[in-house]
Image (cartoon, rainbow, N blue to C red; front, top):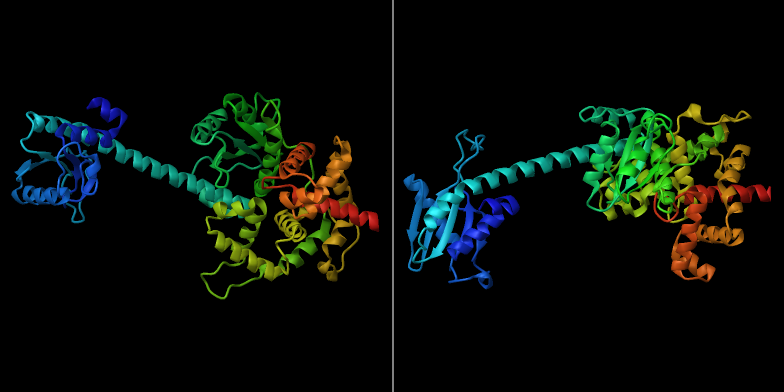
Length: 505
């Protein structure tokens, strides 16, 4: 019994007792409800090792009523072919109480066995009461621990969602009940590990920097952990950085880490870390830091900010007709999540795919955009990133912009010299890539086909696996993720469009 209690718990003990009784064994509540059971049950005659019990539930319920009515400590009842045995289990010190404040009746061990009862069975059942009680108590504690862990994980996920959507003050309020405090500035780290090992990897991550990291199990990718690290915990030259420790300690994990960013720009840090992760998968060290690359939101200047405000105005001022419908803030969060995670946004937002589709349709109607087109997706993504960037960080315009400049189109923004320079640096890796012509053609075709691999392969006259291999090589060239969201396709589309405008002006 001790061995079964350690290895299988209540279920294994009941299965063993049912075998020894050659019948049915279970734990029932004071009202006769079966809580756990093993052995011959109605509708499961194929598992019987002896005589089929006609109605276990009725026999047990009758026995429970008799035991309760007589106030007995144990009960035995014979029918024509079977005997029902009932023994109350030992209750823990902190036993649950009924609604009236009285101690709730203890659950019972119930056994239905063929007559005659095997010699010593009653003594065996009495000896099994303590192991069964301890197993039930341990299992209850484990269930509570899992609920606490789930609540903690959901709380951390909620804080990350708030950070990703720029709701910094609310994130600090929610994080105040958890540990550690949110750091600022930060580096965002994405750790990819084996499925099912995230809990162990999270423990290693916490130990690697003394519990200073904000660790979240990614709600979108089941193999990912997201770490919001204090920037000084990842600085090189002051001992081994946390991300390097994790890559060294966890076998076969892959680590990508962002640049140093303010806490308010956690979403930017996450995108950078995700792109670094795509590169790290192809390297033996399994660890990469995001290379320096300016954000387009930092170079669009005041014309870009005015364009973004004009584009987003219908969305930001939207008031739903019904209070239960999503408002402007929720729609902005939906658009941000969808642009980052594509269809996986349902897991991030915890909504049904039909709900996501309905919200995207509403967003497209409000903004006058066709969100099936990559061009409109890139425009919306840039506008949201500009809005999320603090105004002083944006490069000021060299020429004062009149009030009517708020209606500037995206093409006018992409013609700015600072944006042209950004586009040049974005596409420069293509010039150094092996087979430059093929790489450029693949990129342009893929973007022209709305970032879809199948149509791009057909347009290029190659197989889908062949197109996917080309795009995987381009990921290494750009050191950015292309095939898995968050993808760099929006930045690359903007860069190509800016270069086209420069060539035609």
